[in-house]
Amino acid sequence: MKFLTVLHPLYIEISEKFGLPISEAKAQAIDELLLHHLGKIAEILFFLIGAMTIVEIVDMHRGFEILKKIIKTRKRKITLDFWHRRFFSFRSD
Image 1: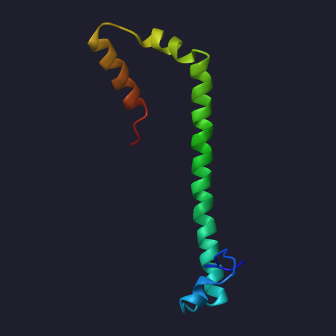
Image 2 (image 1 turned 135 degrees about the vertical axis):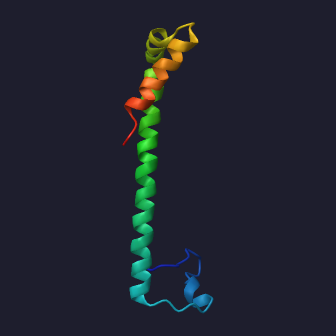
Image 3 (image 1 turned 30 degrees about the vertical axis):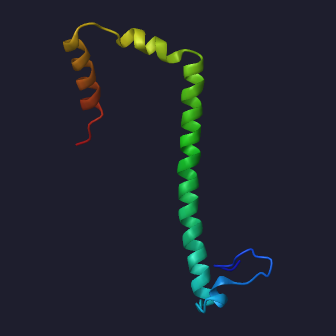
């Protein structure tokens, strides 16, 4: 696999066309670096798509309405106390 190869009808390598000499070792290092970073990006996107799918399924089956009924209150102090407890329980030291 060569880096900077354009899929062109003439199959001209960009590195040769513009006079950018790239050694095989450098090209392989760049390929590995790009593959690593693209893999990490794909991993994050796959996780986010999965999480969004789960949220949509729970929302479709009205799962969040149960939580809204549990949390719902008219008193502001109780609501603030609820969220403060949740925030400080996940706080790292």
